[in-house]
Image (cartoon, rainbow, N blue to C red; front, side, top):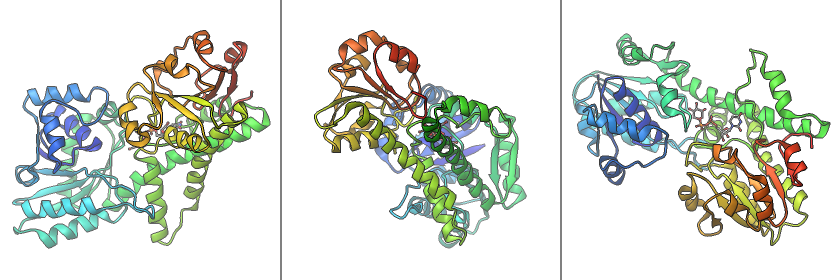
Amino acid sequence: MKLAIIGTGYVGLVTGTCLAEIGNDVICADNDSRKIEVLNDGGMPIYEPGLKELIAKNRTEGRLSFSTDIGEAVRVSDIVFICVGTPSREDGSADLTAIEKVSQAIAGSINSYKLIVEKSTVPVETGEWVKRTIHTFKKEETDFDVASNPEFLREGSALDDFMHPDRVVIGVESERAEKMLRELYEPLNTKIVVTNIEGAEIIKHASNSFLATKISFINALSNICEKAGADVDAVAEGIGLDKRINTHFLKAGIGFGGSCFPKDVKAFIHISEKLGCPFNLLKEVERINEMQKEIAVKKVTEMLWNIPGKVIGVWGLAFKPNTDDVRSAPAIAIIKRLQAEGAKIKVFDPEAMETAKSKLGDSVTYCSDIYETAKDSDCIILMTEWDVFKEVDWNKIKDAMKQPALMDGRNLYDPDELKNLGFKYAGMGREV
Ligand code: UDX
């Protein structure tokens, strides 16, 4: 099939590339000419394992191209995917300005039947607005359908998530649209859930909100475990082995971040209020997530007595491993709180140093590895569980530090091993 992907951000690039890989002709279009130039020169605007290679392969094989001409991409395509950003507004609602602009652009170029698919995460009822906008602005008398097909891609494993999904969700209003989307996803050989557009929109927000709820549940539990003298990881295993609960997303730590969970939980709270059914449970999910960062700062303070003038080494800036994304990363918030209290911060992250510069500027010292970060530090905080942080020569770290103290924000290390080596150790919800 011929496909246009409007928006070459994270979702658009992964979606376009993977749909090309399974045999479609794909044009990824964006009005950001700088981004398109980078992509056409073989560069990458984001870091995602394997994506660069897959883009190169599909370009060479002639199935994938990049363009700033959104109109032309729409004209030559059967299906048009809307993959533009929907950032949070001040009040927590999703800013849908970009979706409206793209809908108008599609309307201006539509010349024959098209299936317009929302891939961006949008509040329920957006599909209706997209439809109305295209009806209002279209210049030619032609049929079209709108559908919703939310993505469930995790940064760092997005290609695998796309190619081997647990399910594909499609929200449609016509048999024609359903048939086209079924055909498109047939090569993935997966369960396809078909519902109406509103249902698909809610599935996306509800999935992310449920996962965020699991994380806040285990984080709240971690604090109870710690006070009661239990280990949260053992408790998580004990509850997670019940298949109805499962062990995924029950890892306690300094909280969730990234471009989706914080934004989607906020948006869902906002939508539920607008619909007259306030989802207060999700407010608590947000509150617990904020509290985890405070708890991390408190633990560092308890280990160091006074913060002013102390040097703190930070391992990991990205909101999770295998990405350079620092959007809503707990590490950034915790660093800022410690800086506000007078700490000097040294940081290292294997991929996210450049992206972190936009948030931290020159207020921190950027180091080239964990040992340089540890040098003359009073405490290390493990913020992101990258593989490189798993193999540590602790004696070397201890020798480099001013005093050996570790705040393990992701419960990555063995507390006994560290304590035996003479470290002060604090984890999240562990018996210490
Ligand atoms: C998420 C969803 O998983 C994906 O389906 C959706 O479409 C986009 O949002 P992503 O943001 O890439 O993906 O990250 P994810 O792996 O889900 O982790 C989100 C955050 O939760 C990270 O900050 C991670 O550290 C944290 N997390 C995750 C925990 O703290 N504990 C866990 O057990 C799992």
